[in-house]
Structures are given as C-alpha cells and as structure tokens.
Image 1 (cartoon, one colour):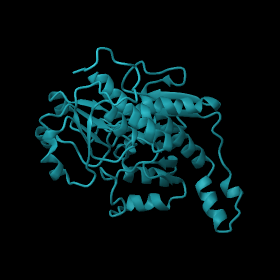
Image 2: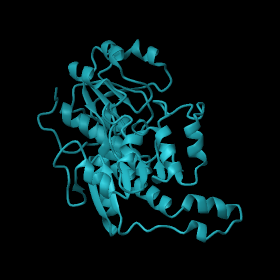
Image 3: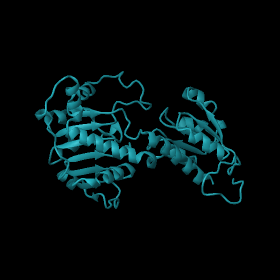
Image 4: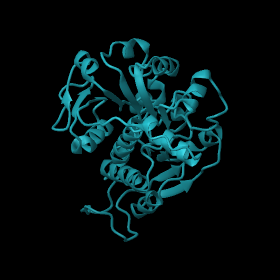
Length: 331
C-alpha cells in the first residue's frame, strides 16, 4: 500500500517510506545497497547468514520477503511455512533452486537478476575462448616453469570462424555483442522463435550443428537442458569445435565430454560450471569422479569456479536489479 500520493522515479535519501512496511530476511551477504535502499523504501531488514534451513523455516512465517543467492533450496515445504511471503529476490541469473510452480501458486513474486551480470558473463566467455584458442593457460604454466615453447603454443585465430550460441537470452545476447569486433559469423539456436537480432542469426539445430566452429552454452537449468550436451548431441556436429559453458554444469554430461575431448571431436573446453557442483558450491573437491580428474589435468581444458558473472561491477548491478524489480512490483 503506497503511503505517498506520488511516487518519485528515483529513490530519495529521505527516510520517509513509500511502501507499507515489509519485513525482509536476507539469507546471503550481498552488496550493501540492497539493505540500504530497502530501508529507504521503509522495509525492515533482518540478516541471518548462519542458521540452518530448518531453523529458518521456524521463523519464515514472520517475513514478507527473502533475499537469497544459492544458500539452500526454496522448496514446497519451505514455501508452505512462509505463510506471509510476498517476494523472493534471487541475487543471480537463475531460479532453479526455487520451486517456481508452487511459488506462483502461492502468488509469490520471483525476482532474479540476469540483467545484472550478463555483461560480466559475455566478457568472461570471450576471454575463455581466446585463452583456449591461443593456449594461454598452458603457455603461462610452462613459462613459470622455465619452459619457452613457442611452436607448441601456436594459436588459432577466431576470425573467419562460425560461433554458435545455444540459448539466446540475456547471456547469449551479451556474448554475441562482445563478438562484434571480430570477423566471425554468429548464429544462435533457441527453442523460442524470433530471438535473433543484428548480432546473431537464428538457425535450426541442423544448420547449427553443420556450421559451428565454436559452441557456447547460455541456457537455464531445466528438465529440457539437463544433460543436453551429450555424446549423441555432439556426434551430430559436422566439424570439431571448441565448447564453452558459462551456464549450468548439469547441462553437460561430463563423462561424454571427456570422451570427445580424447577423440578430438571437441578441440577444447572452457568450463566455468561443472556437473559436480553442489547447490551452494561447497565441498567442491570432496567428490573425485574420474571425469573430473581428467578435466583438471587436460591441457585443452580451462576451468574457472563459477565466476563468469562474478565481478566487482556485477555485484552492485545484481543487487540494484533486485531492488528495482521489487520496487516496481510493490509500488
């Protein structure tokens, strides 16, 4: 319920609130502007970064909103206990850790923030690709060990290649935009029609698999996308290609990826995400499957710890996106 007759387009420094007071529980640390600007909106902020999920469930009925990254799953049981919940702000791109259907049934507003880290993901993906094609990771390790091997590290140029993007939403579009300075053809494949733009031509899956020299994955984690990059899918490509995954680890079957890396069907892989990640990314190295061991030793694999969207700038933009969406919804 609005307490002012006219809402100003920007948040003012005045402490006067423009919304009916709402209690918000912050379950992960984020940029300080989230709490600061919620307070300016008249929200009551509570922080709890240590309680177990079960402990949070005992008090969640007191709250109107939740701010979370990936600390734990917001499932049906949790939502049933959240009797007064009006919104969930997920400070990140995806909503796979939330029971979306049941949240919508309970009329809980879901706010994610892919707009906040899409630029970071685009830049990171491009950096991984150039590093792979020019053996930068291997060359760096060799020089540090006193080895000067120029011929072994002769690179391959991106110009003249066809870059294929799977999933042409916020992240895919950002990567395509970063490629505008290169003499490349950019094509995209998406289950939604009509998403192509001036930066990428949308094609069917057969043309995509026929033409792509590079495949970059930018899809959400859904039942359709989990395990989509497997031996059967890769086997239909007409040419060997470089694979990039800055989306979700479970979209790639790691055992199958290792086999096509060994065979040369995939020339190299840049992986910011892995199939073995926990929901909260804890204890990453506790499990040691053979495929993961191979990736860690492979010279044509570049690994980063789920940081493609993790920059100084994106931390602020993610938080601001959540504030703006919640403000727009409840104004």
